[in-house]
Length: 122
Image 1 (tube, rainbow, N blue to C red):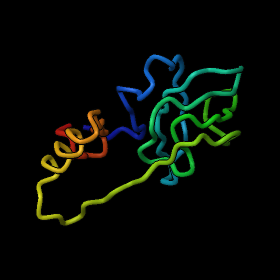
Image 2 (spheres, rainbow, N blue to C red; image 1 turned 120 degrees about the vertical axis):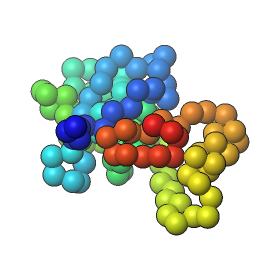
Image 3 (cartoon, one colour; image 1 turned 90 degrees about the vertical axis):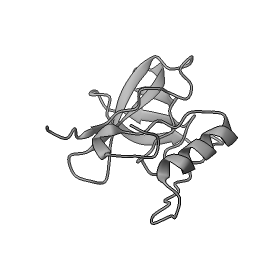
């Protein structure tokens, strides 16, 4: 089985706002992250999904793309931030950590199968 080079998120945080999917290159050559967005102008979008791997991009940011709808820059930052947490060699199984976080936050964490993430059972 071939591993995908595109990180895909099936459930956008702001599904009701999103009407477009754009792409953003990751620092790892040949990899990109799919971002759900709301189109504001031909090549201007509001990010409607919390990025998992992109740096310096957050939910609600206004971004610009090129003609291929690949993100080129952030035009305006939103009030939101993205924090990444790594549990490393935790004594707790990752599924238990994800279940606890989901119960406390009341939302669903969606992970990316191509990256073999085990935090949410994907």
